[in-house]
Each structure stands twice: as structure tokens, then as C-alpha cells.
Image (cartoon, rainbow, N blue to C red; front, side, top):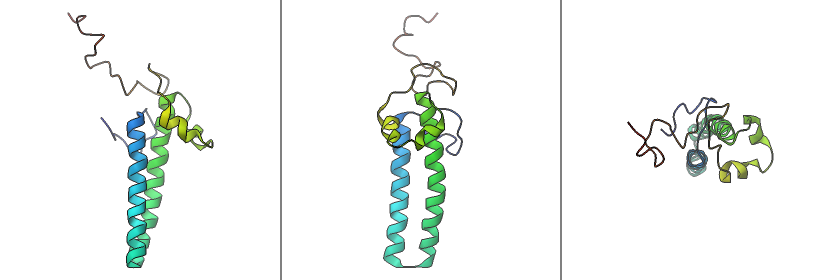
Length: 118
């Protein structure tokens, strides 16, 4: 399930969820800045600050989970250009110390399990 416990740093997420998180953050921030610039009302500037703060927390927590999927500590996301690793690298195929693989759940039937069921 995507976007489960979005403000938690526990667990792992796939590339898809991470990229969608970045796009949602960018769209929300751009939209609020656009409204603030267009209307020039103080209310929208407060919305920009709130969106930036909540979005930054959201983006960092999602980044931590993506680092966990690759098998690294969440602090790795602050390494310059590591963002590209988080976007393009495959996650660990097996469970790692951060949790089970979010891509392949053991409770789902996969091609390898068909025919093995009793």
C-alpha cells in the first residue's frame, strides 16, 4: 500500500512512491508560491511557509525510507547527488535490517509460488 505512515521513518518504500512523494511536494510548494505571488495576500505566504515545513518533513521521511530500501542509513540522503541513487537504484531484493521488501510481499502469489501451493 502506497503512502502508509507517511511521517514515519520506519520501513522501506519503492522508487515509485519516492518519486511520487517528490512530485507531490514540488507541486504543493509551487502551487502555494504561485498563489502567494498572484494574490500578494499574507494568508498565502503563511500557507507557503506551512507547505514548505510540512513538505520538507514529508520529503525527508520518505527519503529515509527510500535509503532503507537500498540498504543504507537515512543519513545517506544528505550526500550530494545521492538523490540519483535513490531514484535509479534497485532496492534490496530480500528483507534487510530495515524491513521486508516492499516490492515482493510474501503473502501474495507470485510466479515462483504458482504450482507449489498445497
